[in-house]
Amino acid sequence: MFTGKDFIQISEKGIKPDVIEKQVKYFIKGFPYIFLYSPATIENKGIVKLSSSKIKQLNDDFDEVILKRNVIKFVPASGAASRMFKTLFLFRENYDGSEKAYQEFLNDKSFNSAHKFISEIKKFAFYNDLKNIMSSENIDIDKCIDSKEYNTVIDFLLFEKGLNYSSLPKGLLKFHSYGGISRTAFEEHFVEAANYSRDSENHAAIHFTISTEHIEKFDSLLKKVLGEYERSFNIKYYVTYSIQKSSTDTIAVDLNNEPFRETDGSLLFRPGGHGALLENMNDLRGDIIFVKNIDNIVPDRLKHETYLYKKALAVYLSELQEKIHAYLKILNTGNADEDLVSEIITFAGEKLKISENNINEFDKAEKINFLFSKLNRPIRICGMVKNEGEPGGGPFWVKDNKGEISLQIVESSQVNFADTSQKEIFNNSTHFNPVDLVCGVKDFKGNNFDLTKYTDPETGFISIKSKDGKDMKALELPGLWNGAMADWITIFVEVPVITFNPVKIINDLLRKEHQ
Image (cartoon, rainbow, N blue to C red; front, side, top):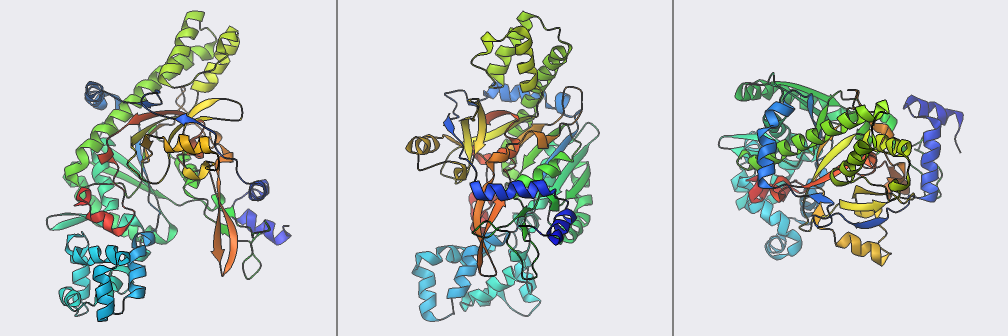
């Protein structure tokens, strides 16, 4: 299947041959479905609902508890913005400026999105930039719109002669306006970091994962605005980038599960999905890591709830982590008496959702070993919003092949909808995963966990893609907040829906939450 030349190529990417062999086996046998035991809900204690008094107490304790910790804000920011403009691309292919096309623009539902974009174009934070760059070419944007030359406007937005937004990552697009100024999504995360990611010395660390081709543009924007935000918030930022490692790329195969080859005979590799970013996260030397997607950001007037709950989740995690570490230090000595072991069992079940049906049949040594192994793991607190029809994953109780039940974030692609009971459980989920995580990644001795040891490799995903007109299979690694964190201590906490406002399509920026 592989030649000597192939193994050289594999080695140059930093991938071990046995990893490639495993990937090919997954293509052949596929990935097993997740077995849903039940939705995680507030009623069945799968989701914690914090009282207003508890949230206040956690916020009151934030400065004392978190400011002395090594905190990092981790922002996956490499996603391309091209998919945001799908409807505009489709429109410009079908609009020729004729009266017939104009009537369709006004009345055809398939053009609703383009109509909304054009009719409300002045509300976008990038409008002045677009107007000015068109003006530099002696083109008046208002006259273009009045004369129904919509494609000219769209072309200046999307392509290189203008703002080139279709080739930029989301982080570099202007999201929000503040009077005479506007901010990119990238900049909005600096504002957030100043409010919940600073330490006692007024330092804030932010780590962005970006694509190689965009490093220069991110760097250029950073140099332009960093001083301004440091002065505004009286803070010193430590900004770092990382690239998705080539060693996390996955091999592509044809429909017969044979290696897919380029025209020159070399193997085709593809990025392993956002699950590959676990390697980037694992390289960080933080204590507490906030994880939030680049596009889930709101204007300043709506940030209060985000700050309130981010601080609450961080302190809640810290309180649990402190208790866990205290117990682990005692368990590690082997000196825990029966009463303390019983106390830890109760704590693990009630607070950490960790239990073992047959634990009462264990002797003391077996109980201690079980508790130590289950408590000595990374911990994550995951904010969950009420499900209002958003596509994507959610919180569930899951049973593994050993019969153990745990809390997991599950994507729809992991569920066997041909099984009516599994479909019913999935559809009865009450909450949605907004990718709002606070992670504790150090053990009770103060050492960073090796996060790659707490994944479930059986939770990857295979999709059909096309290359040069030929179909192929692509493999994505277990998702960062799904299988990549499957063996973490996991707690779900309800957060307000206002804390989840992603920008998936361009017109999302017209929603009141982004104006």
